[in-house]
Length: 280
Image (cartoon, rainbow, N blue to C red):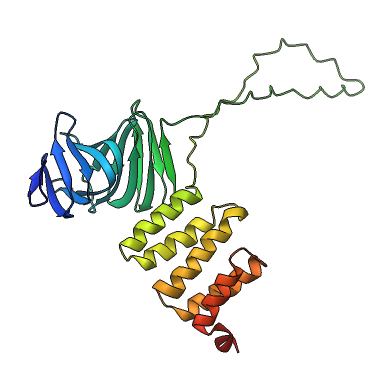
């Protein structure tokens, strides 16, 4: 077992380590069994922070997440440079400068993009772009393509009086337009949003957390939107301490979720901010 004082492990530089870090090297790569650590591939500008136990390995083409969950950040790549690559079981994540979270389970996993832009290159070569706030799962499952209706030719118009009858022509082959089924890229569910929120809160990135919540609320059903709206109001009230934005948000929250399950907590927050006095 390595101690946190080690400067590098498995070809990755140790940028930060907690006192309870437990890490070793074996045939799989760098095995983190406990504690927290930030590892850097300085040549590629890749930094990863573990979220629990994981296995990671530096390879010639990139950094491979063998197993576990980690948050990656990649320094911006200059124009014309090749993307940094994070290898996973289903392919490779190509990055030009961004921040994202990857969870690898051995035969599948997910990537959630927080900032910037990434693309997922499948083992067969197909490339799937991922937008901010989206979560892509692999193996990528393509929905079954529904059967397309065969177009029906309209009945010919009757010939005008006095005109010779048209010659019959044999029908040609019926052409059915082809369509490539779209790749499914789902929005993160409420549990994934709340996990990311805790990560941002733990790093004191409160403004980024507020933006992430506001964006995520638009993609959630009404049943879960109330919870995220309450979390956003709490963030504005107690972490950012922005009374103006918080009071305006609580007013919208109460209007949208009348008699909601967080009504008492909302009233306490409004009292803390003296929202009624500000509204008067």
